[in-house]
Image 1 (cartoon, one colour):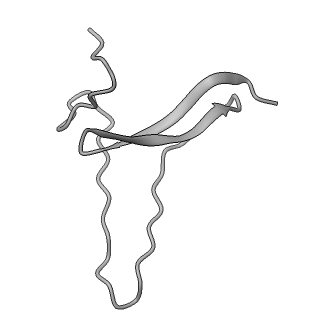
Image 2 (cartoon, rainbow, N blue to C red; image 1 turned 45 degrees about the horizontal axis):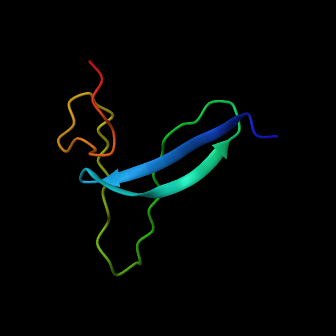
Length: 66
């Protein structure tokens, strides 16, 4: 059963819209995470999150509130 018809989860990379990754979500709580895999002979990867409101690169597809 889908509780949130029309809802979307999408992402940006350096402020540039990438894609919708999930649509019509089930109601409930969602926790943002990241999962990376690197080969043994490759350097470790890093992730940096900025949940705002002071974005280094403000998403162009989203209008500012306030």
